[in-house]
Length: 275
Image (cartoon, rainbow, N blue to C red; front, side, top):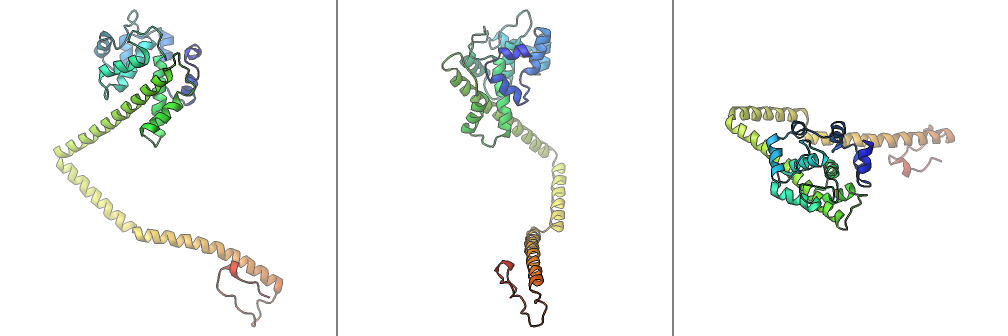
């Protein structure tokens, strides 16, 4: 891993490793141990069918493997395409990758290693999961944080990577929303096919609502909280008040006489000491 880390662009590997994000690191270990993965191993890593990967190679979206072994540049591009393909047309993904690093048959002359681009994407998505601002400005702020320290080989390298990553993040977010929508639609279709189950759920929910209403009245709960809060404040004031009165009694010795005027019932801090 030490040698692989030194090959990465300045500042980028540290950002990825410090945040504990896996990214491409696991695959780097496999590549160092094997010198390249077979098609079946790539399928196991990515979850894709072999025919799909071969089709991408045939169309020029992924470089041809060397001696039937898929190396870092092949696998990184496969992973990126796989992450974006549900939201972006494959032809457009190819153009996006060309915008960043040129055609699929890379010779190492691009502005960033595609494994590091994938690491940037993973790191950005982790941060997006923690962020509250999912606007374009919010996404660009996350991207700027992730690529901080990146040094490009061309004057426009940073601009290109910033735009590409912003687009990639939106694509991944859209994919997640799409999957959630499909899952919810599947539940609704299931309800339509099995109305009896939906009726049972409605009855269970109504029963749960009745139990909630009987066990806790919202208005009484607010009143209870108010009463407790007041009691705490009164306890605090009365305890301090008692300490001051006790001190006055000890110092004057006259508060127990029948002629002593009873203290007026007002806050302790506004009372005058007994003479």
